[in-house]
Figure 1 (cartoon, rainbow over the protein chains, first blue to last red):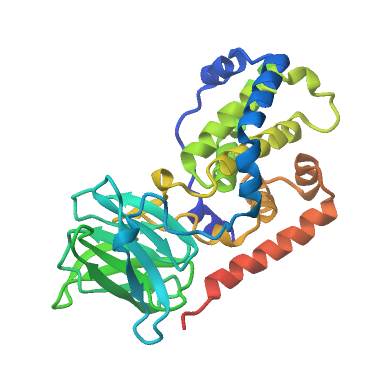
Figure 2 (spheres, one colour):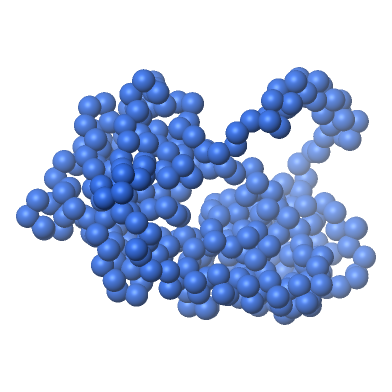
Length: 190
Length: 150
């Protein structure tokens, strides 16, 4: 258990800064009466929208920045299960995503062809402008090789989207991306 | 009192940071939470009445600061999406399987090396709850490691 936890949260060996602690401690704090006034004012402003918040659907959805006129879906080939929804990010060079209706966000195009993986389940990775990626495999901590699904999304998004076909152990060791002839292009992880 | 807090900070900074990182879910947030927590401890040092150890009192403040940091960043906004890039490892992945309470107890036990009584004091819960929660958390982490793909 200790070994696994050590891997999960490595030691932070950066030196401490006690002077920063003292500076923060000395920072002037708002008086309670001033805080109360601000809270009352803010309460008036948010009271009406708050009623709507209480009744809204809180499931993750494509972020507001997504261009909903141009949404693409990545589905599991065998079952037709919807894995990822992707849409261009309005006003930005990048895209917004919704993975398995559980996680959502927007990412900017870095123009580096580097591959990035969203930490945490479900597995979701992408690589902008890298059309050479044709297949990907995750290796689990127990040594199993799990093929991943690679989908190239063209147009304004121009990115390879990498997802798990089915369930994947939360702890994968590495992901290897390969080109058409099976040669590794990049490795993520150890 | 400030000297004692400084001594504790210097002696246990690594452990404080690791626990705060685990709770907040981010290394920088964790480090910042520790700074903020010690600043709070310095400001509020007169509230420490000597019931229990100074360290347990500080742990409670650190845990609360890390909880606040985690709360502020949830749900994950696009600008703070946690990314792994080539060459990085999947730090933190299975921790998402743990409840906030389990996460706090696991790391106070393993990283801070606190006993059940000390954890109980830091979190204001009973030692029995600490033991039961730790057992459940271990089981969850083990299951996460053994989960097999379809």
